[in-house]
Image (tube, rainbow, N blue to C red; front, top):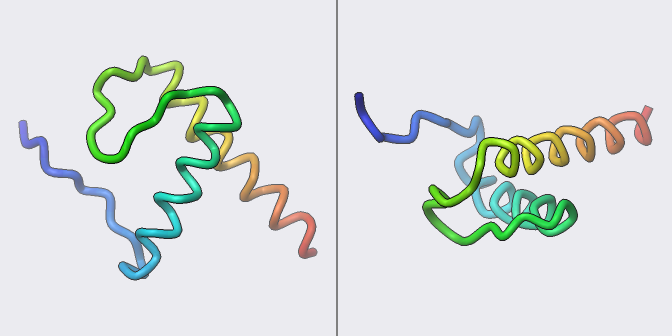
Length: 65
């Protein structure tokens, strides 16, 4: 099993913006997210960060309809 990250952004230049967005979402849900590897997170914590990101993306989309 490879530990290589297979997540690819369609626009590589967006990596910094996505990292910032992830840190903001983690802060909103009270998860201690650090730069780089975050192996200390539980599945619940990691899922709450992703869920918060999706929630904010949906809110943004609905606002722009």
